[in-house]
Length: 158
Image (tube, rainbow, N blue to C red; front, side, top):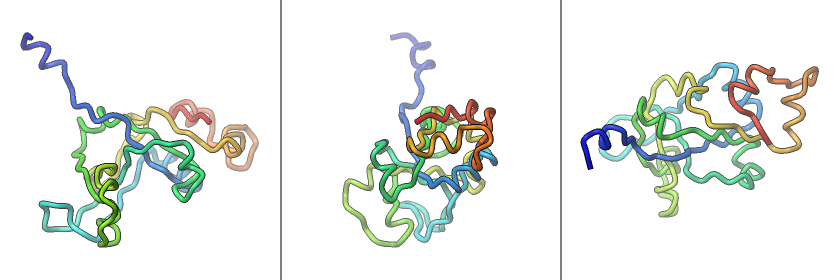
């Protein structure tokens, strides 16, 4: 293997997901930013509280119908990791100080950023909406129409 092969290889994080409710999705898309949270517990190896965006590796359209929200943002983790530090975390512990089931720890990634992920459009592969919501948000003259530029920019689909 020659040296150029090593140079062409990048991190292989894969696709990461954010489940979100629709009013927050509209706010996020208009700002082109995924806003951070301030967590109640420090991440392992850190002493101070940290701000960041929690993402999951579990991308499942059916989970949109549960408490996760009505939209799923698919983010290219390979590109994201070139500009942000990603740390595997137990999101339940960071938010509430409680240990969660062992498998949860491996499914969550914390993007460490005090300002959020921006411009978000650089990292989004696509956004899925619930089928019944798709028409409301993508049809002109509907109350919640996102606009053709945003729909195209973020590759919104159902």
